[in-house]
Image (tube, rainbow, N blue to C red; front, side, top):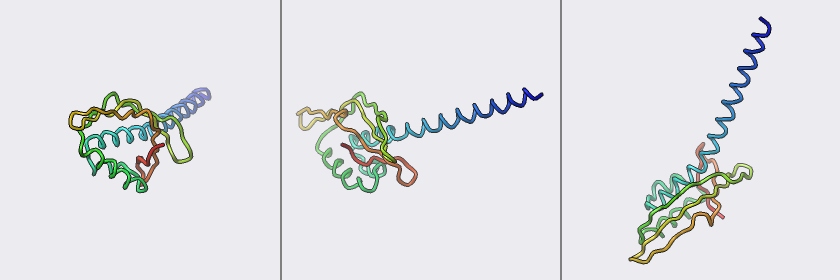
Length: 132
């Protein structure tokens, strides 16, 4: 009977640890998803969505970025983002892929791997806070 109790206690500890680890991992995955959503909203020129995905300090710059896309058609190709670092409460996110732009037949590209995006929690949600 005693071994059975140890087995139950050990099993509960293992299950609890797995739940905590999975929860932490999925929490970290939210920052890259927010950056992906921001990039998609930017390419779609969705100022409301870009604004809601931005932290307060980045919101003005985000809306300026949306304005810069109004004269072009944009298409995202092969977008993937992942966490590449953490600095305190800041998550660093790197992306791959491009935004293909067309301005009156003139093609240009934005290489998304040339930036490291910054994400922070604000109001309980991950937000895009700029890039380096």
